[in-house]
Image (cartoon, rainbow, N blue to C red):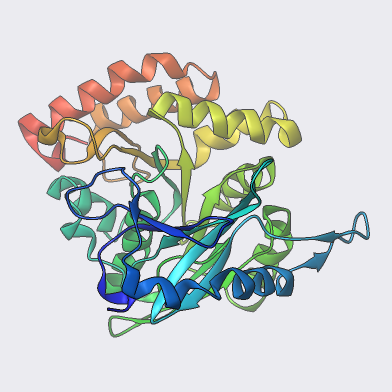
Amino acid sequence: MPLSQLTYSDLIILPDGTARLKGCPETGQQLVPLPKDCEDEVKDLPNRLADAVLAKRQIDPATGLRTESGTIRFFHGGVHYRVADIQDVDAGRTWFLRRLAERVPDLTQLGLPPYLCEWLLLEEQRQGLVLVAGAQASGKTTTASALVAGRLSRHGGHGVTFENPAELPLGGNWGEHGYCFQTEIQGEHELPEQIKRAHRYASPNVIFIGEILTKYAALEALRVALGSKQQLVVATIHGLDVIAALDRLINWAQEFDGANACENLANSLLAIILQDLEGDSKWQKISQYLLLPFSTSQNAESAMRVKGIRAKLRERQFTSLHDDMRELRNRIADHGLNAI
């Protein structure tokens, strides 16, 4: 049986050439041996992976040294993988292959609260920064990709992604009038020039920054989100809760932008949602969220609420946002989306 017909999330190839599978049905996080009839299929994979990593090497213009990406996208046996490796001090090189989804799911099919999907897909939510936060392997990229595809399908226009590596198949047509250009970058230091090039040809309606992992991506996410009232920026970021994710974003951005980082966050944030696959099931995978619409159609009470939260972001009073998130959830539960 080929690997492509098995159900698993990760393939791990050890230095001695043996392999393990992770994320198999009913095994949780346990590593299980690769079936014997698949052993020949992975025998030459380490050599092919090493060649693929070498092929991705580039020259760093600042130092003149060769650099390589920490992860690459790799296609094998009809399946795309995100690949990383580690050099064990005693054994040798181990390869980690995360199996990537074959398609971008519909946002409404991911177990998110229906009202949250509806709000994120409204035509009026077309500017600012949407952050999808969460722990590692919590499905952040899947949710963010589904949001990008959903908006292009529903409202048309075009999107551009900057990923390292590209994970879900976002490139191509979406709906009748939408299209996405999917690109890979070697590192987040390339973002300023790449985003500038994207704007030079035609301002995208949606920009997707695959993951904020450094000060470069943090700065660019905030900067580009301020650039247009017709452009949504979607990005993922690690964080065990909303406060931790915002702290991480600002700590990085301040390395370049100082006090302006909080000002930019206050002026650009449209939404942040925390995805938690192991959280309370009644919250449907989203344990925390903050929604800050720019729409001028808000009632006076909602406008004051948003203004107050933006003031807290400006002053970096993040810990008090717990109260605002609780109040927002109660408002929606009592009065629906019209309450915000």
